[in-house]
Image: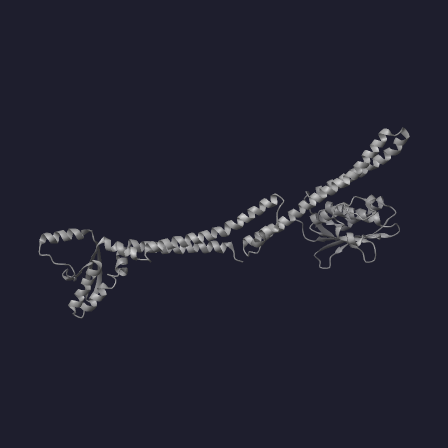
Length: 441
């Protein structure tokens, strides 16, 4: 992964190296004597050339070396022995003392440099140079790789690297900001971050996570809008029947009213039941699970006893080993099983048994709970949509509102489990709940 951390670290190291290089160059700039002696074309080889001729007693060529420095670069050179005696010079001798004073005054503003060199192991010589300021300025301006140019190059490199680093951070943040605005306006499109999601750094990971979040939120918003439409549709029918019944009651005789009141009471009860299921569905999404250690056998036994009280003619077979336990929210699990058991009681024919079982999954990673009835099962084209709100098979509108399985699904998801609905191979309908064995955080 091309981490942003390494980019920032690389830019900081580059800035550090360039700062060190600039510090070195500025130090060399302040120590200009050695800089001039080693870099100026009139000085860097002058002493070596003069010593080469002087050591061979070639006095005239040695003097020409000094004169060449004066002619080409206006450099005055004097060579002194250790006892202070001047050995050589390229200065002009003036016969007039006044002229010597004027020349010396003129040269007092020149740059003076000294260089000590070794003629032999026993004798050292001192070279004294004087250069006019104009010559130094001219040479510095002609130096493309001088300190000023290096400073400008370093600043440009640091600025360019900082600009690239800034753009690599701010541009993805701008795209994320636009995506947040789109998400807030419910107009989010995953294509807006598609290119960014292909990146292999932290911004790519963030874009992929944001896409998943956006997709989930869009799905929830779509489900909410669909639920509101379905709720309004489902509430319209009982309300319409109540309005018709009340209108008939106002114009009916006393005997006719007595016949209409039970129907109105039944519609009120249906409406109350529907509203209760809708509120239960909305409440589930806000509740937080309260996990605890649950013994499954007592919980399932109580569920079977309640079902037998509700439908005493139904047969229920319980298969649950003693000691089987699960760390989960007992109240939410009981609500799931109660919804599924009521659904099984509604469609199971009398004389055939409903089976309720609990066992460890083959991989030992969780618990499998199953409720199977012996009824007609669900139509094949509705199996994938049974847990959607208000989905019912044809001819079953009188048996409920299609919210029981939706509530069960939401509860199982809250328990970090999985609900599977399908027809049993031997007939009937089976609901399977896969719950993790670990703790629910």
